[in-house]
Image (cartoon, rainbow, N blue to C red; front, side, top):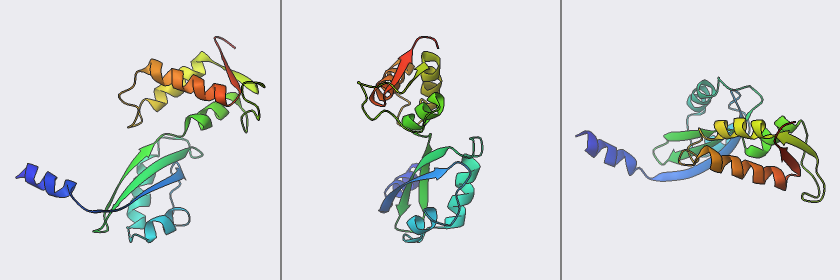
Length: 155
């Protein structure tokens, strides 16, 4: 009986997939959340309460990526991801933006410890669970290089 219900639930028709960036603990029924969910007639307050509860352990200024799957029966599910690697790199380096000429000009440098800490956070993301910490670190180093941030062994 339970497997039959799971199959029925899994086949619900999807109305839309909505991707938003919302500050941790800062979901409000105002823009950008309100209009994005309102056009699919989703319960704004239910989303805001659930999102804020899930992200309360993060700092309030962290921009959380959220993917909302809206179904045609006006229900929804959502997945919260950690902020982007570029956001973490900018915070770790203490800069506002990357280099205008990456590969030619270096804006600043960060240590491998910073890269490892970012990788540990990113490993919790649903799309990174299957990757090793080493693979995530290599990806972060590549992103840092493309931003003009040098990665050094020790600062």
